[in-house]
Image (cartoon, rainbow, N blue to C red; front, side, top):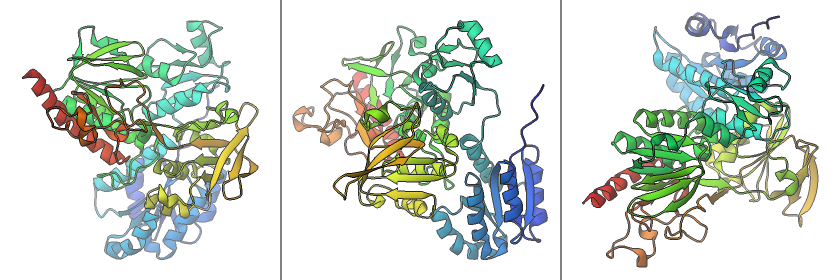
Amino acid sequence: MTESPRPKPVILLVATAESRDVLENEFRGRYARDYDVRTLLGPDGVLEPAGALVAEGRQIALVGVDHGLGEVALGLVDDLRKLSPSSRRIVLVPSGTFQQALEVLRPALAVGRLDTYLLIPQGPRDEEFHTAITEYLSEWATSTSTPEVAGVRIVDDGTQPAVAGIRDFLDRMGVPWTRYRPDSAVADELFAEVGSGAELPLVSAFGRPTVVGATDRLVAAGFYGAPSDLGDDFVADLLIVGAGPAGLAAAVYGASEGLRTVVLDPEAVGGQAGTSSMIRNYLGFPRGVSGMRLAFRARLQATRFGARIFTGRAVEGLTLGDVHEVSYDEGVLQTRSVLIACGVRYRRLGVDGLEALVGMGVYYGAATSVAREMEGRDVFIVGGGNSAGQAALHLARFARSVTIVVRRPTLAETMSAYLVDEIATHDDITVLTRAQVVDGGGDGHLERISLADLDADGTTRTVPADGLFLLLGAEPGCDWLPDEVVRDARGFVLTGRDVPKELWRDGLPPAPLETSVPGVFAAGDIRAGSMKRVASASGEGAGAVSQVHAHLAAARD
């Protein structure tokens, strides 16, 4: 018996009588094959049919509201967000009123009441308009919709914590996946290959051998090749440790300028930035971009220039010399220069009851792939940085309630103003200040956490919790560095004039991004004094390449 086809996602348009035909022609002409385009005349009679779609279980991918409806347009956007929080929300502006509309729409956009505003097309082939629409549909599909394309197959029984990390890795790499139960036909096929008693989870794709007892690192290493493929006599010009914004930018510039460039990372590309559901303040992306999509594009760009990027490869040591040797979990690579761009890692909470449930309701990082499973549930986020704010906004599209727990008296001390303002507009997001998670537990999955009130002598209360996302700030991830690479008291790498003067060469400081060791550079969050922002990390990664060129030229001379 074949399954009935899944209903198409809905594009819901709320139009005036004047704009109805234009909007229907634009959207049905482009999107009717893959989406169910519905048009409602506003402002009356909109919420009831929209609510009926939601009650039927239909997914509303995008909502477009004509600003020509007047003052009620933004109110309709707010009401539709409550009905379908995961929908992308766009206000469509008639050309004759665009300038006046901006005075109302810009403040609404700044606090997240809508995703963007667009001028209604005035003629055929308005590709700028449709570029924006397809970008939002793509973001909705990758973050909200269940994949419909056959991709990676995961077999598990729901009790393997490693599955959460595997799914998060695949989502960040832009790879669709599907889960199967151990009694499914797909499971029978994979067990026939690896043996009936094989350890779960099983992961299979791309014609490669099935990974048994899979973890995110095993999947990464199995699917994306090994540094040993480069050959025993390979010597890189530039070896980059870390595939976050700094490392990816360096890979693009290094490879494009003819350097033999290799990148090693123990996880997916993107670093912590790659887990961000939406970055709104990155130059050149006026409508925002998810960390996953930014990392995916950078990876594609770097590999097209010839950079070799190996995920699932943890660097374990650096041996210094005229040609440096970087040891990783399965071997050694030689390189003439090294860029340390491994970023930072989240601090551990250190609560035994919660550490035991990591992957089963407790997650370090944003874990955007898990957000869909939080629908109708109560979740908590610990952390007050931008990543925590972005995670809260993303989870609010699904969860019944989201609570941000911070030790400080306000979010404004550590979070960008645009995120603080947007969070304030969400009825479903609560900010709990001067508080700390001190305990928690559950039977095989998170069920409860205990919160201490830091203003009341640590008085605690226990509350139900279905998800706990820990974004606890940063600590450097470079324990593998030798002592010759000098770091500050917190473990961040010193560069340029911050290197102690007694280690300067010929009375001159190292280059601005060079460490205390010639030919070893640092960029991004791992560098002492860095801004801890995506844009600055990207700039440092790109800037490091020119200093690598100078070092290589001096070495040749």
